Length: 475
Image (cartoon, rainbow, N blue to C red):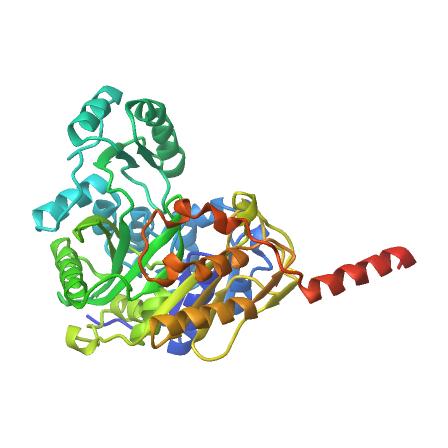
């Protein structure tokens, strides 16, 4: 049954909240932002039609499902969009929405719960005939079992938090000693980050390529894929640069992987937008890794190559509308690349660099998109993720998208804080990256790329001189 959505509460912050507010504006839907005291000057507060304070604690309000849904009810919202991060993959928010008769823009609580449990997800995929990485069929009971399983699989192995996500709660163990040292640490990380000490083990696929497939599924059994994204450029399991489509797949591999993703979604009765993540080994075998039951940070590159607005499709599906596209209707054109511009200092072990943005210049021109959480004069609070801007570039060919990426990175200006901009300059100059053949070990195998020399910025120099004159004159 189709039920119109006229007002949406965005249960998130930063650039993803801005992104959702923009989708609402184009659809004629009223958007409602939430914010804590630390976020009172945030861009998403300025972009939404309404904004409501959810308390002084910088984080607690964004994690309070009951309070968020009560506010949605109080402000007469038809639906809640979780974005990504915070409660986006917590079934509690979806359940609380259902109890209040408010639509949750995502899958059902049951599917979120099942796919959020990594061992349950592996079992579901294995039952559907989706290839999975060899690993324990259940959570590890203790260190002795972990040691026995590691001997069975052979080192290296991966310890993973069962409720984990976002690259956290994962440790690679190359030897028995490393496993002994890491076991309690992973349990502790899992408990602190996800509220659960459950951990399982997988055989480590050494330096795989990380390929994920975007899917859309409605409430009528229709599922399509929007092709794949290559997320192999990452550091400590945190993605840095994403590419769509993958320059590493053949047409046959692309079709096979898309079919696997659709089958996986059907197997669990999935609805709304989701992502099936795979690892690809040196022999071009694919293995299911996990399913993300939410919008992905890197959705922009899929939108760019297909022309499909994924956020708007999420809202339409939540309103009970059938998919507007069949698989044969979906095609891609060219290549898109997304750079996560984080406020970090790559030359100093990626140390966070929060503070005031003294100048922000967004790049432009053909094939360039920015999704920002910052503006000139904005004070980046130290309580949240370091992502400041997502820069997406598109071109018809791989060499052209590299050239456009280099130009757009030069065009962008972010002053007042350290960012990953200069590091991405170095990556794009690297021959291994330019060849289009890389894996998840790229960052580790190229430590020289962080030893760049910062170029002098004339604007920075002028600012420093002006500050010195003011100080000297006592103004």
